[in-house]
Image 1 (cartoon, rainbow, N blue to C red):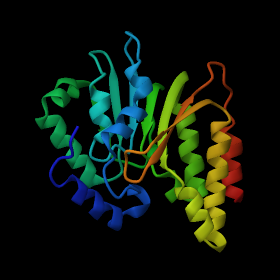
Image 2 (tube, rainbow, N blue to C red):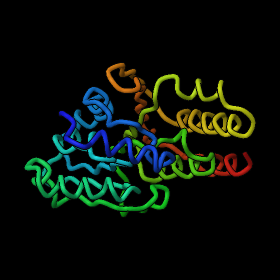
Image 3 (cartoon, helix red, strand yellow):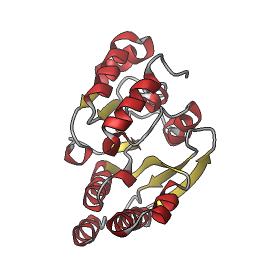
Image 4 (cartoon, rainbow, N blue to C red):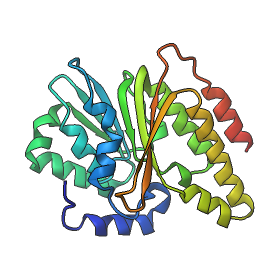
Length: 231
C-alpha cells in the first residue's frame, strides 16, 4: 500500500487550512492501517456492517475493502469535501474498490450528526478527538455507542505522547479543554473491554485502541454529555 502522487501534499494543505477536522499532517502508514483493522480481518462468514469515520483519502479503507464480501455494508462519513472527491475517484477507478462499490455509501456531514438504519459490527475511526471541544467529543462518543452493536468493535488511534505534550505546554482554558477531553475518553473506555497496540512505524508514532462493546451493556452516554456541557 504505497502513497499515491499528491496525497501527502493534499494532507498538508488540508492540515493547515482545516486543522480541527483534519488533525493529521500526513497519511497514515500501512502498519497503522493494518493494526487498526486487525479485528475486521478476523471477521466470520456472516455479512457485516462496517462504519469508516473520517476516512480521509482512504488509507484505512484500502485495508477494509480487502476484507469485504457480497452482502456486507460499508458506510463512510467524511466532513471534508476534498477527501470525498478523492474517495469517489478511487471507487470509480481502482478495481478492488469498484468490486464493492455497490454496497458502499459515502456521507458528507459531521459524524455526530450521522444516523444509520442499523448498528455496526466494526467502527474504524480516524477522527482527531483531541482537536475538538469537550462537548463535541462527548457527542462523538455518544454516537460511537449508539452505532456499535453489542459485542462490536470500535478501533481508533491517537499519536503517542501528543496529549501529554499538549497538556504540559498548554495554559489556562486550553489546558482545561485537553484534560476534559482526556477524562471523557477514559470514561468511555471504562465501559468497554479495551486492548491497545503501539505503532512506531508511523509519522508520528501512534497508539491504537480497540474497544469491544459488552454484549449486555447499558450505556452511560447521558452522563458523558452532561459532564461535557458543564466543563
